[in-house]
Length: 281
Ligand code: R5P
Image 1 (tube, rainbow, N blue to C red):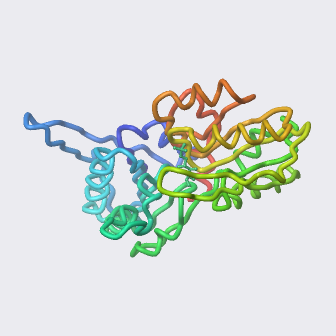
Image 2 (cartoon, protein in one colour):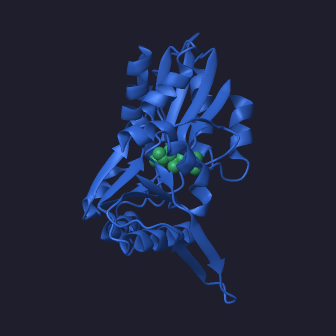
């Protein structure tokens, strides 16, 4: 398989190359004086299996991914796969208020114009897949997260809301411990309330797992409640660490350990899913 990567996912793509049958495709990149960008693949990809790797949370990366997919498609590969480690805009997978765009639909529909298959990692909501013309598969990082925490004597894995419970349960089932979720009630666009009076985590080592950490608000509030219910230690993990502003430092200061996967590179991305992903492909 030939692997093409956007500029920002180069390290992830390199780590995906676990077998000698995988080859990195060099890309010529230029910026014209007016700021427009140019991409050219320096390899003959005709009749080859090709994977183009890129995240979709930064708008300029979306453009780069689209151009690289088009360049690969024009080479007439035998199969073209779009690998999206962090599928940004997935939280807008539906209309919450009249007049809104379904951002996830725009992205996935456009990518599926080029790719024969789309592979994501813990996309926020797989319902977006219904907008794709191509087959879509979501890789779960749960096994990798569980693997990282297997020596940490975790008693309980918690999700910050019911929508993320299946992730916590997947991790807990591998670790052989209990799982649960925070009972969250949305009051309005900016206010959420938690009803967790029943939670008793006395003396427990609790792992809090989510798909995304952005501003950190969700994790910080959940952590506070879990600590108040008597936990002896709280560990935090997520698949995608966006870490807006100072959120990583704030979370790390309040927990026993903060660790995320390598879909977005940071000093906290110590769980390697890139290698496992190549088996999944
Ligand atoms: C929302 O449903 C997601 O699963 C995350 O919980 C959310 O995106 C985290 O955002 P923040 O870190 O800004 O609270």
